[in-house]
Length: 283
Image (cartoon, helix red, strand yellow):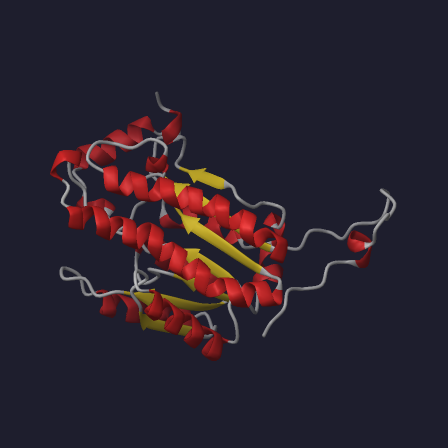
């Protein structure tokens, strides 16, 4: 199993003088190359962009997907897998429903066997079932919470053992700006993302002593296939309310995720980085 690079002696020696020479910060490509990233829901959208960002930096990538009644996700997963392999990195792609602990355990075990370990986990898999609070069915509530919160918990728990054993790991959860500023009709989604923020902070406390960083990103609206299904006026309002006057490209968020998995962010944990173009600043 791959282990993280050992820290410089001067940085670890007790009582080292304040004037001790410190090494120059390593560039992202140097600090993540040769490692293994798991990106849940990595076949499409933000997950796909994140997986590609890792692959471009020489990271082996594992992605999972689930079948959906109205989308051919398996075909999209195959296209993403092909795009990842074009970067010359090892890739593993498989169906795995993060709501089911046994499937997650099987998936992580396969990743470790085929790719040689697990160093980064991006909990990107998520679903929405919008509707006014008084009309939400118990099923709509439960599926969103089970996927967005319990699914992330299952994945964190599955990688915690290997990461603790190697005393190294980076976990990034994909929350949402709507955890802090919910709109109408998304009580289940907003609650799930707020729960994911709490899980992020708690996991950071539990796993920090094992040198595992746990953070979250909270994107605003991102130009993915799902965004295209929203009414045009919703997108226009988001652009208008953003202080930058635009919504994010998937790469805008993916690059923050890979930054949080780099040694440049080694002293950041338990934090939520809002990547919304200033949307939450609007009153």
